[in-house]
Image (cartoon, rainbow, N blue to C red; front, side):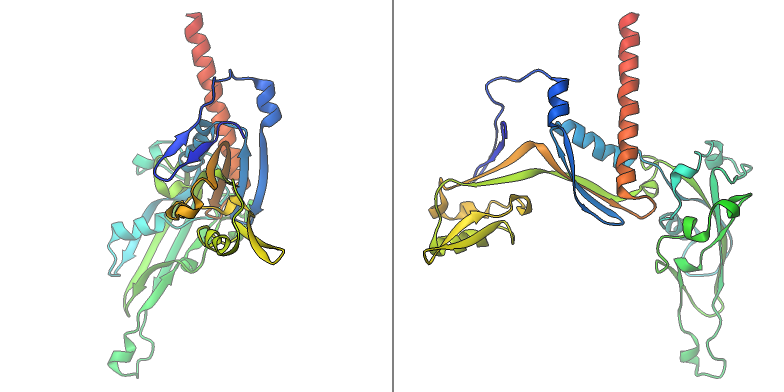
Length: 330
């Protein structure tokens, strides 16, 4: 570990070393690693090793603002007698995540967002509808039992295939990610009838187009014990950190503390509250080792989202290089 960030009691000390080494491509290739730590259907945790913080932050920003997804953009409301205003209802519908993979659709032309005459096509749009009405539960029941609120969930939204979409997709492929998202509640006699149009868009235009719940990173913690810590002090040291960071082992009947897993540390620095640990603990961060986490909303696998972000970042770098080259030639 070169030039760690030292965490003192009241400050953070960034060590830069005696000299700043020039960038070396071969050394970068040798040191760069991506290690997958945890992976599930919607979550991905991995380590980025051997890169600068600017690159890690660029990936995070691209994931949050430039990886596209599908979302409901237009809502044609034919009937809405519920207590929710049309504008609020349309806004709620736009935030419902869709299963559709955005890589299988083209970006809609700009006039779709502003023109009333723009028509959707099977290549760039998905169409959904919702028709639902609440009637009295039992006409012979007492008045206060007749008026029971009827919840409207996302499961009541139905997909309407465009063109040849029914030959390519199923409702499982392009439907709603979760069936139990509450949209509204109807009273007897109230109804909602509307049609929704989903298009491919960028999160920087609207948050509803985000393909992730969130994406973040943190530097890898590093904890070193500079002296032996035994007995009750070992138990106290263990309580200063999250579970699993400090372990205990018995040597000749005496408890001895050791660092079990620095990764689980949350950098609370509680250990500095106790004078008996002065000059016995070194807390630091590894500057070129990042713990990266991506939480997908469900439309795309988080590993695919990461690869899409990489491709976007590569295109940006190539574009910037070409522009710099052209200016140099001029």
